[in-house]
Image 1 (spheres, rainbow, N blue to C red):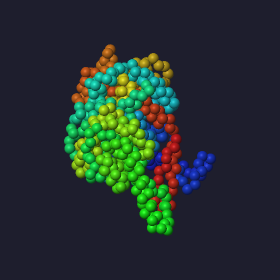
Image 2: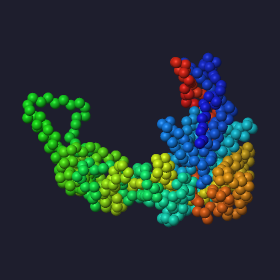
Image 3: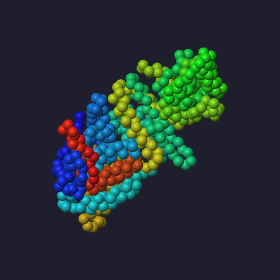
Length: 560
């Protein structure tokens, strides 16, 4: 188990009293700490390197898992860079921005969260020697910027187009992403699940391709059973049961109506008082309530649906009318689930019952059934004709395993989405890094002036990915890396990298290990830009408020 605690106080040793420099600060009741110049840059680099070291062992197929205890006492076991850093509490502002980039990478492309941290840490580590030699940070930054532009153009040169309709090729790409995760034992099953789910939610409208995994590909985790029982449903599953025991629990080719209004008598928004002088008036009020519910139910029954889903409640009286008309009702469905059902069976969500039309009824579903899994009832709407939403049903022994499987599946689906949106591939296993590193070194020889050294250092920093892969599978780092460097000096060997299982050199195209261009480009951009950002900082000022009871001081935000 790896733990990290980067203490803020260790990076802010000097104190500046407001009295000494009245023009700069005027904070009453605050104890101000300030640090500037070389010390800040060294501190930032150290913080970034510390974060990178925490998850260095999480790269590649031989990756180790980290076990973390969250503040609530729950356990997280994972080798996903973003999931680990999310749980870690750090004080230092530079370390916080490192954690932020792993989250950005996860939201943007879903994969490469570990690589981006390791690469950013290494970019800063190689810059340290130039700062010690009194080279100005702006010189280093301009060299890094130039190197980033060249790196991105080189990636485009090395990349090869891919046919997204070739299922076998797509499965290979997803397999490369899953191989480094805990799911690798069930990689065939996981790859098929990810590809089917993404293909289902893919939507082309007006020449624009939309793949919204978060909204329309819901992962439902049901503890129990085996991981092999997991599947993608051709439809939607909701954790609900029917509202009345006499309602049908299985309907073939159901006509589905979706509502987001309640089938109850409307209550006043705030507290409502009614004064009644005659007894008949009270009976009349009750009768009005009944008539209102009857009218709502008649509006629905007019369309002859078999199945109703509503986001709000269904009163007992409404259930009575619906059971008489042989209609099954399910209440308090989440809004997100309702929109998924709408996409799956072609229904439209109605806000008022009196506005229901025939075209609002969904007829795309082939089967509705309620099943009991474990202790809970689940509603299945499956065998849809052309579903544009789906549910992934995950089974597994415990909650921790299911949480890790879900994280890995999300990564796999994101990779699949990236390839569909930008169908270009690069070889994996550190081959790209070595190829780009070799080309950058070649190009640096044509540069003049001081900038060529930081430029060459970027090429050197890229080697951290293959080096870490070799370290993680226990091979001889120096021997393998030297022979890999030699291999890349030959013509046509750009796809040679490290076999993460054995630590030997291999041609990645033959092994079928490849990565999407979008993921690699985003990794390089994020890593280099973070290094540039942290090198720019030369002053950290932090105000610590004095607590009245003389308790420990709280750390304020670090300012640039």
